[in-house]
Amino acid sequence: MPHHKSNTEPSYKPCQVLPDHQVPYAIWFEDTLHHYGVPTWKFDLYLLVSDLDKEAELLVKAGWVLDSQAPHQIGNSRVELPQQRLISPTSKTITVLPPAQEWKFPLMESPDDASSTTDSHENVSFPPLPGFLDVLVESWLDSPSDDAMLLLHLACHISYLYAYVPTLKERSFAEQIKCEHRQSHFDVLAGMQTGNIQFRKHQRAIRDGLLRGQY
Image 1 (tube, rainbow, N blue to C red):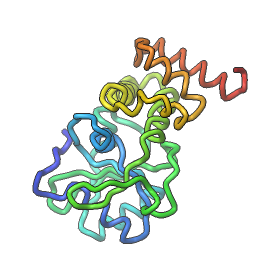
Image 2 (image 1 turned 120 degrees about the horizontal axis):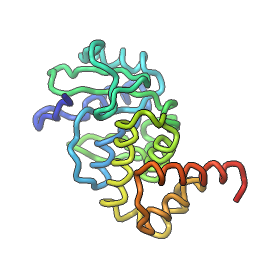
Image 3 (image 1 turned 45 degrees about the horizontal axis):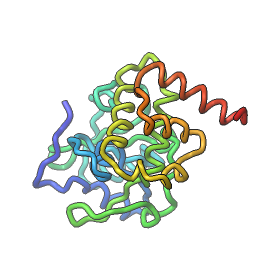
Image 4 (image 1 turned 90 degrees about the vertical axis):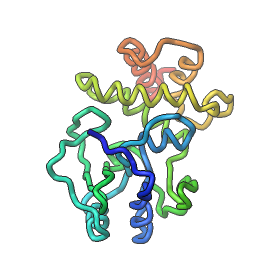
């Protein structure tokens, strides 16, 4: 069962440890949704990093404990994707480190260069909204079709952004996402039924055609 974050424990404590060692990271999944205005619960803290073992060791030295028994999960989906799971020093929260390369997200050279905000009086790094949406869409289109729970998890994240973040409806937003994802963006805004197998197959064909220069 996911750990709910305590109101008394600094949720983003790992985000203090990593920058102290000049390690870039990006907060991911529910925390990022919440940051951009989606009224979602925040469960485990996901941080995209470049080197799983190195960054996990930094947290271990700061008091976190590797959770080697728990299965690799994203939401309720058990995945084969690499990640490191760590229990906080107070045993109240879980931090999960997925590799940024696996999600095709370019981490900045310095945490100071990343999109940041202030939460609980701490500066923490979130991905820019267009980049976050691009990665979610690409991951949803390319994830194995037999992993229904992961597909549902990603589709829900995408739907939440369109439902709760007004910025996505601004005309200029389309120019900030990848060209190959713009038709999907316009179709969602036009009210097409999304998140299902048919929509995914349709959008993947369009995306692949755009990448091949057919349009």
